[in-house]
Image (cartoon, rainbow, N blue to C red):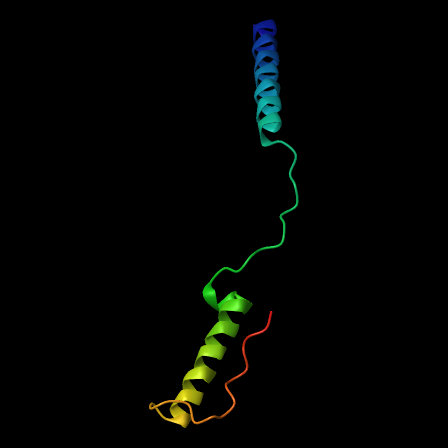
Amino acid sequence: MVRFLFVILLLAAVIYAVFWAINRRNDGPQQPAGPRGPVGPDDDEDFLRQLDWERRRDAHRKQQGEGGDTGGDPPPAPTG
C-alpha cells in the first residue's frame, strides 16, 4: 500500500512539473513596458496646445469684431 501511494505521489509531482514547465515557456521573456502614450485628450500636449490656440484665436476675433480684421496682429500660431 505504501508503495502504491509513493507511485501516485511521484506521478503527481511529474505531472505538476510538466505543466509548470509548459506554462513557464508560454509566458516567454517579459520585456519592460515602453513609455506610455497619452491616455486621454487632456493628457496630449499637442491637443491642449491646439485648444489654447483656438481659444486665443476666437478671443482675438471677438475683440476685433465679427465684421473682419482691423489690421491688428493675429494670435501667435502654435509651435511644435
